[in-house]
Length: 413
Image (cartoon, rainbow, N blue to C red; front, side, top):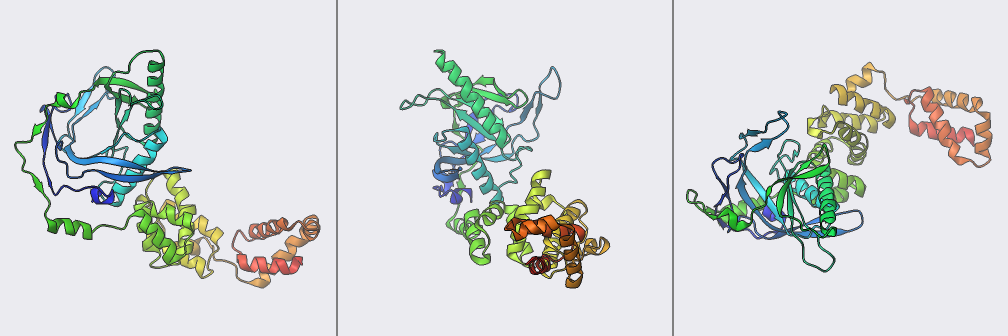
């Protein structure tokens, strides 16, 4: 599925190889990988930055077993090895040396992250190690060949990828400008000190003594399996974005934000089965996204469920509550998960529809603010918002906004 998503060549027959090396986190002395014929061959992916798009070519994507994990921060003067993840299968994606800056590298990793989460290849949780990045950095003067590279291993956040690469660029620049040579090596990024440090000298491919894995048969993907995978291919973000705009007349920016997240788009599609799409999109991109960012969680991990949120949208649409009051209710549901109707009832949040009552409040507001009335009549039209705000303050945000606007215009004119 990953190969199809990046328009790659798919090898329907692929092989496993042994990569021979001994490190503390791989005590059996070799790693099962795919060197000569991986499942996924050359492909490409587009990245988007603020003012341009760029295609990054993917060299290959192969299956490999994970090693263990060396940890240096558990004890003050010792390193320890966690072998629990050793042998776990992983998908290793290798790109061509076409990424020209740390910002492009982050955009590339974000594009991959979006793809693998959309395809349910992994949950994309970088902090827990579900997805990690090894960044190779090499410098050159304009027009010259790329210089000696260093590899920064196992970077586990978008922010750290950018910081690690930028540090390594500065470090290598200093070495080259002083007339020295960069050493090919593997380095680790220390996020506390914001620096990279040497881990080991970097081997060349022939140092690994690759040979065909004798204990495993070739992988053969039949035409039938290949067709089944193609037929079950999910809708990807760009297709989803275009469909949201076309079918629901949603603002392009809102559609992009929702479609970019598998979790958010699944939530949105569940909600709009029961309620208004445009209003749903507006509140998801505004109030819901703000809460998700604040708590740094996915919508699926929150207490806001699609059916309850759809109920909130209905209550705005039928005039039971105002959009302003909805913000208060969203925050309440976010904290407690309580039913929307229960919150409206127990907190007395039902919208004031009585136009006679609204008119009485509007007259009182106008009477108490003669200077603003004079300024408004003299052409300061923006003061209309001031009067609306005063009425909403008096009614604790419960007055029907359409009625407020209509009555105010009539009274002020």
